[in-house]
Image 1 (cartoon, helix red, strand yellow):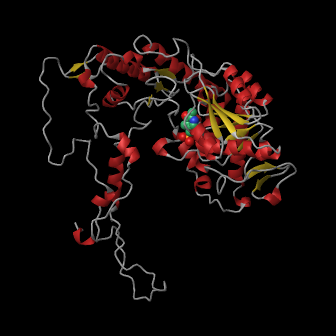
Image 2 (tube, protein in one colour):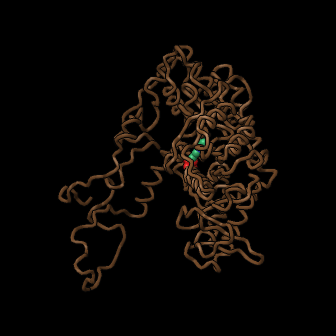
Image 3 (cartoon, rainbow, N blue to C red):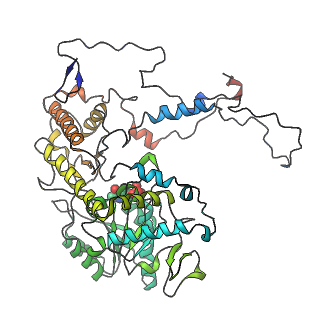
Length: 527
Ligand SMILES: *Cc1c(COP(=O)(O)O)cnc(C)c1O
């Protein structure tokens, strides 16, 4: 067997590729077909041994089930195997580099997992008396302190369950603050480079969205903000800005923009999804933000994507602090107090209401605090520095072959390419992404942000070693060279090696099949 330049086995040149023989099962070694649970299970038998119940008289007043339960049954090994086989079809951060820009797919340290499984945290019940859960409240309070310290803010609402939920929380606090001032403003300004959740949040809570155009260099022009404020004088409730922005650039005039917003009596909402670029380096509070959600599952390493629940606490400036939602924890002289309802409110506290039934994502809180304490302040700062270094390493490794829409200047923790380099190759941005799947990579974020053509947003995070970055860069260089040399067969119809080929993603999104229809019971035979 010969090796390629990366030391990986490759077919010796001149050898004939052997047609892969068909298999009896349709499986290809570890690449197995997996039917649905409903297609796999036994319909007429039970997966566990239960004694026949003794004679009894139902007490359900005629509501007892008349037909079979129609759920498939399994033995424990059968159920295990189904889910393990499915899990092997997933790409995961535990399987390889996951360059999905704006998502901060970083390693989830196993220490976090270990601590979150401590019975005292894992077995808590949200309705447990406060006196029996003081350790949990202490932890939430400690994490709140860290978040306020890191962001330079005065308050934090812990209950939102993800970034977008945090946006809603922050914007509702802003709405409440305006109401307390006796004002009803109707407009929210959102730059063109914003994540889709920003305008969606503003619209969801009843605001009209006005777009702020991007400058040629990918950043927001304070003059453009000033123009919009003037055009809609007295009507603008807030600006929602992402910083560093979704082009991977730090907004150089963010303070000027904050001042303009405040002078117009509006509030500055910052989308904090990209906080991983600046933790320990800059405090958003010092830049003039009034509210910012923190994607705990991005910046502070708790599992996300298909892998777990999110958590999106919102830090608030002094001006918005009184409007934070219930419930919250108040530190009294001797204790921590859980403020759950209006009768417990102190002078000046005017919560806008409640976002969730309980206190937030406890398991995520434990993981995030474990991450913070194991890194320490200096470690968190270094993580940000390494994340930025890694993104720039990729930028420099590819900038001669791929196109940088805003020139060869340093980026923050993610690097944005556009598809100019594919011009006249016959390979589309989508083809390029699909060919990456054959190489064993999850593609980067494609076609976002919308401000550049055929965007490819790469975020390696600090988790990646230099060897891993080198292989990624070499793979992308090889793909680009293939495209430029007219070897389009590698792209058309890719992926060739994935369990499923090119899927109709539009149909999947527009006409999802969400319901399984059972065959009629007579068709179901016991296996
Ligand atoms: C991820 C992300 C969001 C939304 O966060 P979720 O936790 O997925 O709800 C919002 N804005 C930006 C820029 C993001 O990257």
